[in-house]
Length: 208
Image (cartoon, rainbow, N blue to C red; front, side, top):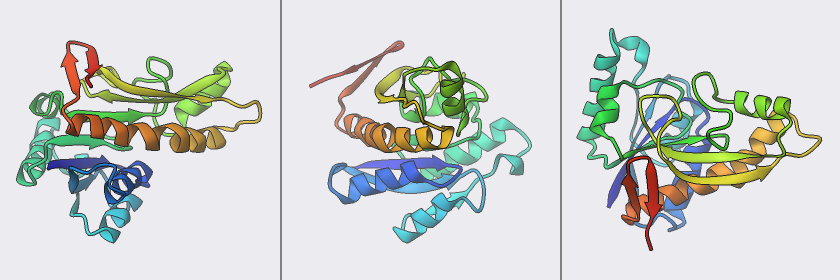
């Protein structure tokens, strides 16, 4: 059984996609051990509570340094036996100590086709605003392993989504979530749980 530690900051729609995938049997050998929110009041915490999943708030503001914050996260995940950390709409920066501890075992979902519309400051609705400003015809979502630099880690999966002429940032965001994020994040977790992701430098190979 693969114990998941889910990092959240907001509504938790990607968390819900993972919960649904476990309950449907798609993620057969996975269990959410703990949900960690960067802020109190995040609706993701209500989702965890509804499904009897342990949850906790660990706020960066409560710690003097990024190292102390990393230590708190590590202590939490180690105490819950977490084997894979999933950033599911997590908007707080973690430090190199945390990333080194879970290197190759932290994945993030980003709402664009990396390397487009990514990096520092590109979160939430912003990648969708930028996609429309640039006039791209295709956008999407990316699941990648996490490295210290924002959105720079090896890419695991990507899924394209058509941009429509009448799209607003909000309609595009919703469609990218529904057509891409909620599909490829559980898929990436499933591949990891089955031992089918081979990380070699910056390249991720999916084995049969």
